[in-house]
Image (cartoon, rainbow over the protein chains, first blue to last red):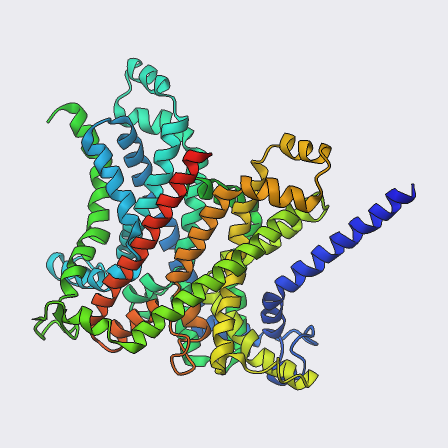
Length: 285
Length: 289
């Protein structure tokens, strides 16, 4: 009895300690959120306290100056389109590379994996030069366009995507199913989309999650390509905002809070998938 | 072309086309750019200078300092991230009732992204710290960290750790969960204490996860840019400028396109060598297991 009581108390204390630690761990986010509602004077007198009144004016100002609705829309379009393109191209390629046992397919796979080593900083400048000349030569705007950005994300996401799908096809997609479908009269295209692609779902989820986190938050690539304000994504606009209004912390914090909220909503609505997806990606990566 | 080859082309050519245009052509032309002197303006000619850019890079103290700084930063952050992440993982895989809450909360910073995290902490380590100093009178600890060279550097380590620890925790959780209960039960029956079981059984079995995490932190830290830009901008007086930022500034701020690209190639070689070494190490371990 006594022993159980002591154990219970210890457990409660451990739980409480964990909770306190976690709250402290996230305190920077708390500080940003509470101060986004305070007036300047209130902020500097007590930076840690809850706001006495809720001032929404900084939010209104930030929405307007960041052109938030439009910027949010741009981020959403770029992220969704890029992820869709990456999933389609990578799953098709990975499946074909696994099922074709030739020297060429082995070479193509190793080529993709080895070139994953190339850091973005090594290709950023030449990529921009190439995109400039492509724009001039073809008349298609590759720079300063959301479409061009999606195209580039498809290229940078190719290695990881093919790697993850390749591993899954090799280990968990039975060839017998595909053979049966071919006997039933399906062509290769139908075999892939009707039989194989649905089986790939766990890896598709992993790829979607890893790429959404990457592309939504990515700064350097869009900052190099998107020059006009109308095309900017959230991180690029945030950095522009900070470059211009750093001293106005209240508005800056309102802007930060607004940009974090969509991420947190995404996190809580897909939390299980996200953690599982990361685990699956990590075990293979 | 046979039917089979046509299907192969249909499934693989689109991806390889995009990949070659976006990654391979820029990489190869990047090697070329590293041998020229050019200010980035299309109307100005590129002058071929051979290995002069590389020679210049290895005599450039600002570049060498940033390399050294990045190495120190990477080594320290690898330790802090992994110790913290492993600790978190052990706590949130225990039988505590709030373990899932802990897992969810600690992972959260990773989702926010380096640039925003940098700006958030710019306030915390700047104005917020200074205000706290005035309130508490402890101005030796609470002051404007970002205007002090050492403390701005420590700030980078703090923020990078805060960003990555949750991610690595998830990988350690996956590793810990793959250790079978039988092993732990056997250790219990044999009378092993918690710490004995941890150091003699769980950690050795966790080696694959540890290797993955060390590698991921290593390459993430070495390539760090967003946090660097948003938190310190390389300042004060370039004291926290990391390699990525040095390369970026050389190319786009100082308009030394050829010279900056030579640094970018050196950067690639360093990253490549580290990764090769790491892959070697990992695959050898896997054979043993």
